[in-house]
Structures are given as C-alpha cells and as structure tokens.
Length: 121
Image 1: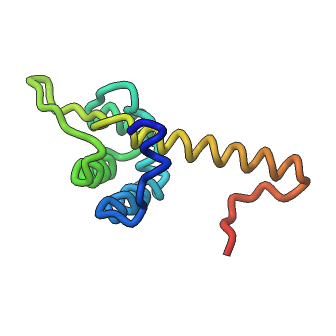
Image 2: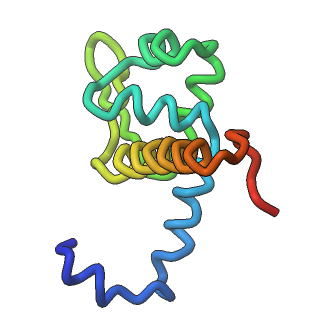
C-alpha cells in the first residue's frame, strides 16, 4: 500500500482480526526468532532448529502455526521441505518491534529509569 493510502485506512475492517492474530503470533519470542532467521533465506526445519537453538519438535510445531497463519510457506523439494516467509511484512513487523524495544530502552537509560522489560499495567 502506498503512504497516502495508509493515511485514509479504516481500522474497523475485516482485516482487524487477522492483524490481531499476526500480533498474537509475534508475541512469542521463539516465533520472532524464527521469523527473523528466515527473513532473507529459505531453511529446512532442521537448519532452522539449529539457527534458533531449539529442539526439532518445537521448531516443527511453531512452523506449523506460522504456516497455518500464512506467515511462512513450505516449499517441497527432492532434498526435503524448506520454509520461507510468505512476504516481507512479518519480518518487517518483527524488526520494527525490536527497533522499538531498543529505542525504548535507550530512552529509559537517558531518563535514568530502570531498564527492565516489564510491561506497564
């Protein structure tokens, strides 16, 4: 979508529930690590498990969830299944969230506040 279209977007749309589902999936550090790990590459479940230091069964389970949500897709090849992001959006959201967290921590340090990761009530 172009920048001008974003300014006129209505946020009470049928896409709102789907957006919330994406954020719910990204609210898990394991899935964020996985998304960031394959944002520029294709990887087998075994390779991805090694990259993010997870057991293969947990990696496969999380890949199934991400695939069901349309965030990753599976490419079947003779050498096995490979996973890749279906688009740039999930990777961009994960990167933006990390950038935001880093920025917030820097702001807290500048303000002399604690740098805990606790969430406000």
